[in-house]
Length: 225
Length: 338
Ligand SMILES: Nc1ncnc2c1ncn2[C@@H]1O[C@H](COP(=O)(O)OP(=O)(O)OP(=O)(O)O)[C@@H](O)[C@H]1O
Ligand SMILES: [Mg+2]
Image 1 (tube, helix red, strand yellow):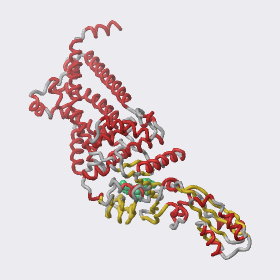
Image 2 (spheres, protein in one colour; image 1 turned 90 degrees about the vertical axis):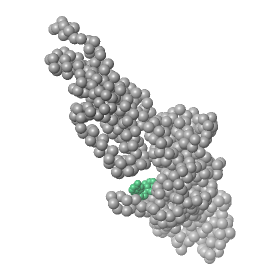
Image 3 (tube, chains in turn blue, brown; image 1 turned 30 degrees about the vertical axis):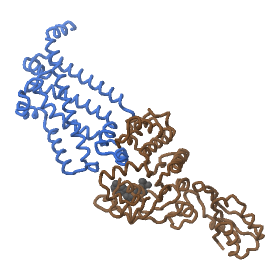
């Protein structure tokens, strides 16, 4: 039994798997960076223009909210395919690690923005009021009070988003995105190499697990409740 | 210093207009501690929040040192707010910032101070509120009283001329309440800071306020010097609030129960006279006895006062003469029951 497992593992091309793992990490890391850069301001604006908030604006909020919901309700696979021309126009290719990043960012940004909005909503109104009473400007309230106060919650949102990106990145293998998903499709599915499939899933699981534990640690480290 | 003129404010709840303040006018003098009292929902918070425009009145004017703050531009309002401290029932500290960082926050907002100046001011303020040893703790690690002290230090950071207190002691136990009230009084005296505080407890008014206004369902029903309002409440609500803090005025019931003969007098002492044997002198002069039925002796802010109800025993003289005799000692005498 155990020797059988060994032969299966022995027949695998470990360098392929290593490379695919690195590609997945690059896809997740690169898209996470842009997702946070775009999603954080979007989430803050969603929050600020929401009902009873400092910049409350029903129309702007409704439009942003609809846009976010539209992107979130589109299945990611569809988004991947629909965005191919856009990706090509933007960076010249739609395959490999670079080609996977734009759809990943566009898929994850609305998700992250909504998480940010929810985290900000959890802040006690009194904190905003106290800042207003001190004569703080809106940027001072956001950067001096809201973001520091929600930092642990935002870290948790980044963790959840990173994990979502791991599965999105694997899915982007469908359109030749590279990484572990690509490996699973090409070898595991098209060539019926079940062992590759199993190893791929195991590596993805490990990745998710590490992200979660690391994220939880960070949240705890910065939480002062 | 502050003139609130004909201020009204309503909220819309489920499409229905709910009045919160109806034509409120009052004046707060420079350097005084002004209290606003009322039951829950009376509009106290709404009123105090019009003083820094956290709530904007629908109509009326809010004059501070002669200028109507409702007409301020955004920039003017910000600089006015920086000179107006506010403390809250639930402290509203930033949980992710340490004590020192919370106090530093309003100082950094102005962009007027150097880092060294800010640090010096933070030290000063923490010293003032006796929290120097807790500067690197987070709010979650402090007691309620300590949190409110941070709130006070933060509110005083930019050397305000006016301090607004929205139920600043309502979340604290009686002992902590006393220490916070002492701190506020101390600040009022040392810095000549004008304080407007709202509360639903007459004890708070009695302990620190110079003048008081009573708010009932958005309407100002009574205002005046604390001693006057406390000892001679006019409005039914004021009487109820006074009763709550020190039950009194049961005399009529007591006399009925004991079937007491003779007139009942209510005597009010205010100031140094409280500690003089007035009752004994008058008893001697008129050859009368006084039977004390009930009463309180205490302090309004730092002024001693007493209010007792006595049964007159013996041949009752002309009541007008008796009243005049008490009057000579500056003791107010009212007939409760002939
Ligand atoms: N943001 C708001 N939206 C709608 N109604 C409000 C709002 N704030 C206050 N009210 C209403 O206005 C009235 C006055 O409220 P306010 O908070 O000023 O009372 P308060 O005297 O401070 O009461 P409490 O002692 O409970 O704090 C109440 O009827 C309250 O329900
Ligand atoms: Mg209130």
